[in-house]
Image 1 (tube, one colour):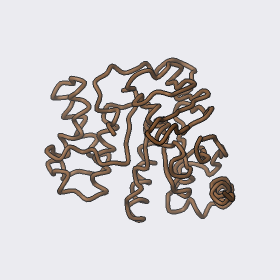
Image 2 (cartoon, helix red, strand yellow):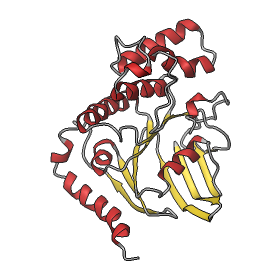
Image 3 (tube, rainbow, N blue to C red):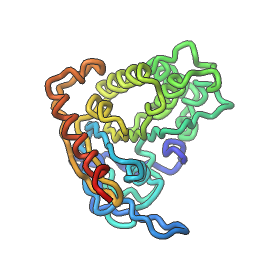
Length: 275
């Protein structure tokens, strides 16, 4: 799957005042295959305000990644509308940054050369590219690894490089598809803390897909629970744990247990339903 930030299609206008940063109105999505028609989304409605951090959890195949692809303009809905600041997403949406779960670093490029790709595609001059790359490398903690190739990096470092490449052109909306899923527990906590720090500094609008309820509660302002397909929203849970948050302390907050209980109940119910 191709990340939206590698496209050279002109960015859509994501700066209209007062409109939600992201909005889905009655969205349906159907795929066709040799085995027949698959309805993945049905009448999906939700919106995010500017600067809001939304997490989405749900069973495998419930349409979480499909929603991100629709927001990125990599696919189009079968019904309904997908909007960015009130404007329909009708083509590849370069007004967003898309961090996929798959490693998309170019193996023949160094860290600094990989991070520079989106600016090169936008014809930034060399001096500005160098300055922005240097700033992003410092922000994600990759100082000293600028000239390393992806094969010379740990999994966590590769994730940091991908995050830096996504952030370098300062997109107002970030889509993140299980970015920390394959990492070990300790490294996941470190990168969650880094993400919260970057989000607090820039207040981007984030749509974050995860299978981890604890991760969703730790990071998000709201958590949506998707049903099995065709997807509907089973629960829209505002997270009341105050910010700033320390990732290793969130689970000890008095509100954590109640949030976890409600989210797990919404996830568990369709899984346990008799067939």
